[in-house]
Image (cartoon, rainbow, N blue to C red):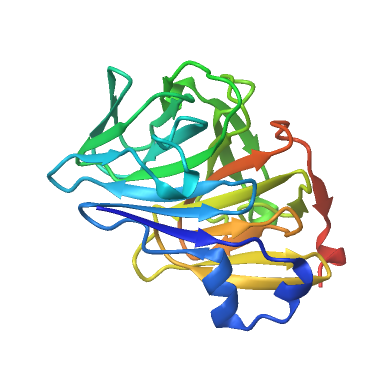
Length: 274
């Protein structure tokens, strides 16, 4: 079963007047992981698509998505797959890959129908592509590891870069995930914006009662979302992003837009946030 929800782009002036329910309707990504379903959110932020696939005992096939107006979803797109569940398999273009929890698979443009099977809970991110790059499975040991933050500022964390220029080539999709050290809560601080790229998050590895306070909005007009395990957030190019969580958590970040320069960002110091 395939379900697709379309999200229109929101102007920052519109976001200033949103109440909690409206903010969540436009920017919170929830209920992406339902057993036996593929659920996608097709956005008008750089035509970025995010979603989940949970085989739950029977294979699921991602093929035609009406919103793209192409015979196959990947005819003019690339796809990143992150397994946040048990061991599963992904098959496309005559190849098959086994993904353990935390593994990342990149599928290039033109890979054809994609089949998900096994015990995996697959997080999906996709962006338009202009050129085909080879599909590649990137395990944690293959990723680029970056240590940032400090215990004193409650943001000591490990960043693992997977679909990233330092690891492999893609058209415009950039993806990795960040894990907080014990006792740290801020997933990034100072907050930042990057006007040339949108970004999306998926928070996972959380207990059912835990929440992340996800900060968004313009630097002088901040807003927030309380986000549960396996929920995500859409971050427009004009929005800051940072967050603090209760207990341990990991978040997957994925970006699409004008460039793939991970460091192309503008930091907003805490004293300048409102």
